[in-house]
Image (cartoon, rainbow, N blue to C red; front, side):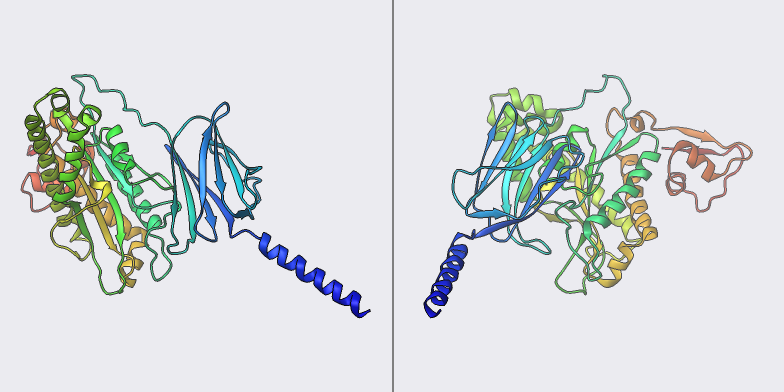
Length: 432
């Protein structure tokens, strides 16, 4: 009996030891799919940093990822729901033992980016797969048509990136999207203006894609909306950021070095820069384009700060220059608006309030309206209607006139030097 008992114990020990040795060093605990209008992000959640290799196959189109010394704890049924890029995610037989091979069956050939992410916030180790549609320019407007002013709105963060998380558990990505949607409605209500949402719902857009999407839609201005955060709950208030000179110079240098390929990034001088063999002339033209964009960005930032201070405390009273990818376009005036500190309890409470969000959106919209009244882009409806006047008739009020011409009441009062909302029959008002 003693011998049999000893043999049994030895068998259990050997089996347990074999199981421990056979266990993989890493495991895939979850897979999340984030569809977006122009891309799909697939995120693999892992216990440890992924050791991986990947390759593509065609006919049919597939992406194959090998996770070394890994096991999968994921059930693959019903992972994909209503995504037109990834048709199916499944496992396949790996070439190496103790590894996992995952196959993404794709509907077409997409621009591909695969990269790991270290643990941050609520997330652990991840492997991210981004599948992008090719960005194609929208058709050009007819030569003599009067186009709308286009404002690109970027709601910061999204999808797998929640942004900062407040002391009450608020997600920055939700706050920024709520404000962005309110701003979108205000802009689209204004005749001669059109808003383009770079992020329409809860998905992630890579930073370098945002200016490209704005350019695709021929944006005259890019506004990125965020909520700031700090390690201390004390800082509060809004601020407006523009591209730093250092970053702008480096971007221009890159475009000049590749001007045959990227001349469209330099605005109206692009074709001249592309075709000239004179490097000095090319650089001079590029610098002029860059300086105009930076000046315009700073000018709009001052308009935004003027309006924001009517709604909230300002954390920075002047535009602040930083190196941020979302602001890098050398041909589109761009700003990043920090609407408040989500790490400050009072700011966080306000930023979650729909009425307060509307006030912030209205302040930004008023800044946009005021800025483009003074600097209407060439070829736009607003530029063509500069100098419109209106004669007041019986039954009209200032608010009725403002509604008719799709301008703000404050703009009418400022343009006509009015101190009240009272107008008289026969009075001539300047609309623009």
